[in-house]
Length: 93
Image 1: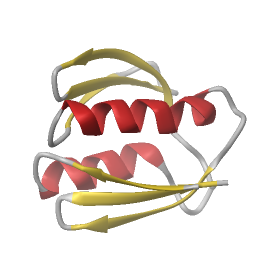
Image 2: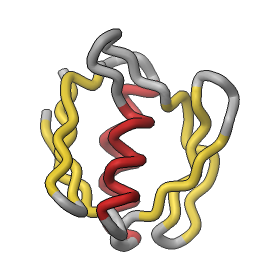
Image 3: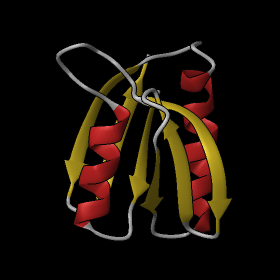
Image 4: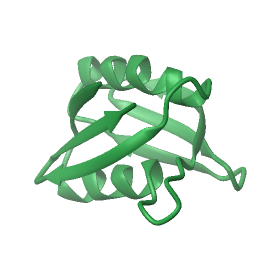
């Protein structure tokens, strides 16, 4: 499954990609979604830290939250991420 998420800017897209997936270990760092406030997504990582990611709008937050839930539940794994300026293309399998 593949989804394209639009972030507020290129920096937020790079931050999201780095928090989502590490190619060398095929690992996903995000363990849960702590809060959603309008277009801001607050996620918890494996190291118990929390990080904020600003997406383009609330619709993108909803799309991402739905998409990532099966990864958080360990039903799927992130296979790849590609940054396309402000957008990030995420593939799970």
